Image 1 (cartoon, rainbow, N blue to C red):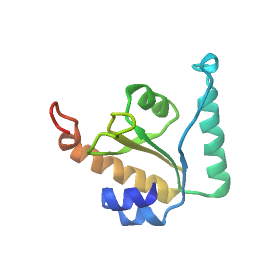
Image 2: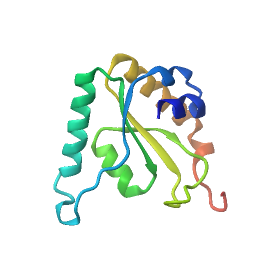
Image 3: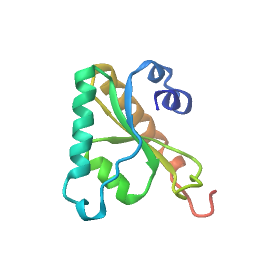
Image 4: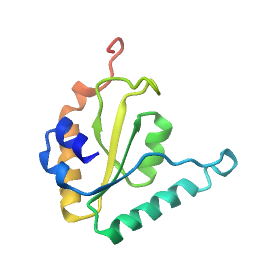
Length: 128
């Protein structure tokens, strides 16, 4: 994830940061909406802090349900991809939480850049 942010977002310093990337959280259907996933993310955040890493992050096909989940886990959008993913049909979204001082600074700068470029990144009808 740091390398992706460095090359695609124009922040080469991202490549030198230490990030724990959560790739998947699976919760059984009957246990969903009970806070299990949020507790798993909280445990990962605690591990990141104990290890002295800079950020906690994830990337996924940007569905509304997943966006809501990750926002509830205090991660913020920092990069939106330009092409839909073949697997999900969604546009890829990267989200981070800065946990060290340099991680927080990077997240703030990435959010600012995303906000400035948001109008050109929004998926438009007919754009593929």
